Image (cartoon, rainbow, N blue to C red):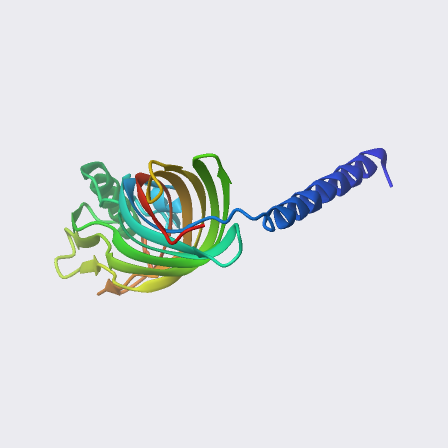
Length: 257
């Protein structure tokens, strides 16, 4: 075994020991008498499209980008809550609306040029409407740690992404008058997962301020294409979605410690 590999292996063992000690520390901490209050919160803030969902590159001839979503920075509005069955461990859920815009004029121009190239026509006319919007329902474990008036929260959740709408697009190939096809708006559903953290600051025994950030990811929803006679050009059949939510709001404590 070469020296570099030995060093790597030693470092990995050290990391494993640190992670184990951290989990033991959390486990011991949950036995403390102080119990985190169950709560309901309402938050809102910007939602930043990331990954393939945010990309606006159409690709190149015979190598088209079928995963780019052209999504924009939008907004999320959320209601969440958690119930603690151990002092600092609970089960929580969230339901929120998110919006991530639609195709811009620049996007439409790129798409038109790509179809002109792909179908070898003189010109393509692309018209678009609508935007990305969805309802997301998530559930999972919450880990919360009170420090004076602050409570630090961590969560891992999974659940359902229900698309309310996606941008639609109609393409007309100018010198093939009978050739018009459409990428339809989708209302499909898919599984998604989310991780996040944040903190709550107690303004009183029952009310507090919330600040949180979450990363959401889904392999994608199905997209229906109409009147496509071949696979030339960009053809989206499944749209991956991922974003970062950053939000602020108010929390309401339930019960007593």
